[in-house]
Length: 348
Image 1: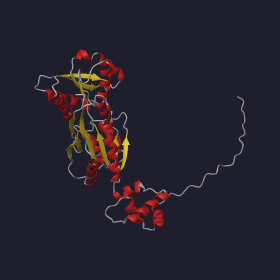
Image 2: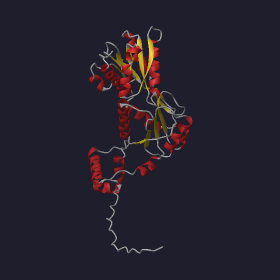
Image 3: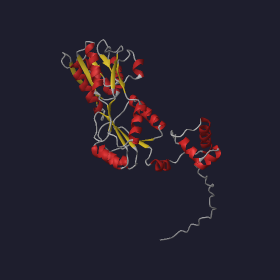
Image 4: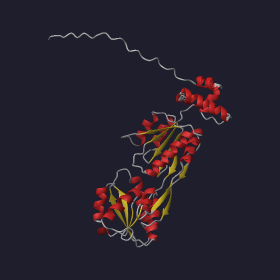
């Protein structure tokens, strides 16, 4: 086999720029004219020590000029635990209402000097997912939805999590719980339609996987509200898709429904447009009510009746997390946090 020699020309080594030294709290202290302890008190929002406002401004300005940020690992060593709050990404589709709630919660936790990390555990469920979360050694974990069991709570606590908080329909032993009972959403919608004189009520049940945790209790809530009356309840399956809505609207008259609870405002808007395209009057032929009280529902014509859902404020939940972190031995708390109120508009 012939060999080919290739001569590689000599090149001068690339000159790397001199690395910049990482600014320290001592640098901030020198520039601000204060002690390192004062820098620590100011940048860690320590409330136990009184620092004058001019001094706080000097420290923050010096840190900004130097590009200094506190070292999270060092701060964790001083505190004896991390300041990371882990929020696993919901394994079900969430709408604007819940997105706003989670954003508010993250802001409130950051104000209490916690670092919020969102974690996407694709393919992992329940206690198996808890083991993946535990590897990050969070000080607290906020678990949306259902699926976490007692073993998962135990795994998280053994890894150092001082607080495990679930947001869902049930309590889990060992965890704090914010109980969200969606039966009340359905009961409110059903009671409204019953009071308005509607007797052939449809309830949209989304085909989207994962939404059963919300749709099933809402459907049962409507049935409970209409129980004992001469009203009937019909389950109406619907995918969140324009073509699916059009196909449903084309056979709507055969269903004989005079009202529909459309699961939430987004499904209600999708269905309303398809029904109107089919020449079905709202509310003349079919009344429609949604849930979540989104602003877009007020812009529709006719304006959309809805169930306004009261969620806990992000500040209240952040305070619960902080309290649980500071008192890890306290008994788990449970709070029912989902309220429902009908907002009557033109569509019903």
